[in-house]
Amino acid sequence: MLPSSLCAGPIGGRVRRMQKRLIYKLCRMDDWQTAVAAGTFTGSEHDKRDGFIHCSAADQVPGSAARYFPGEDVVLLSIDSGQVADIVKWEENPRGLFPHLYGELPITAVTGVEFVRWNGEDHVLPYLPDA
Image 1 (cartoon, rainbow, N blue to C red):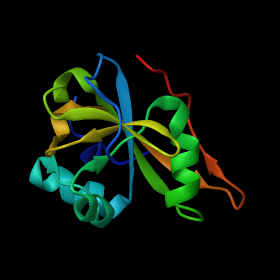
Image 2 (cartoon, rainbow, N blue to C red):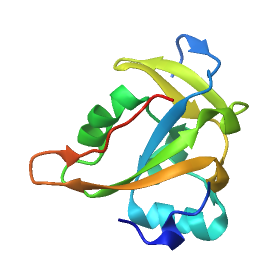
Image 3 (tube, rainbow, N blue to C red):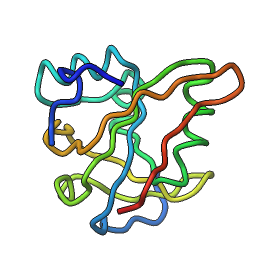
Image 4 (cartoon, rainbow, N blue to C red):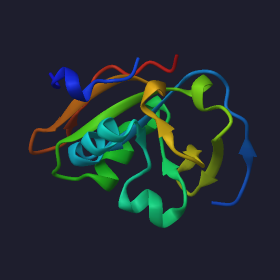
């Protein structure tokens, strides 16, 4: 369970507008702590380098966790896509169609925060609904 202070807040190719549903962001604890203090998540170093905040649909989270955070405990943010509809685009890459945020993520759009533990073989993920 995360401390309540960290739970604040209620590339080319085909692009489509976001339908209202949950999307997810994996990040390191220190990045989330910085976001909570600032009131907005501006992205990880990787996000800033690419010019957008990388997010995932529910079925993409396990692959994203394995690819970008092997061997690490991380934080999983559940995001109300309706609150970021003006900055989200779904874009294709070689692994599928992913939601990308072109702007800062207000922590008020984060509806859930879960600690995701690495158990030595993979990440222990919670149930992830699409909506």
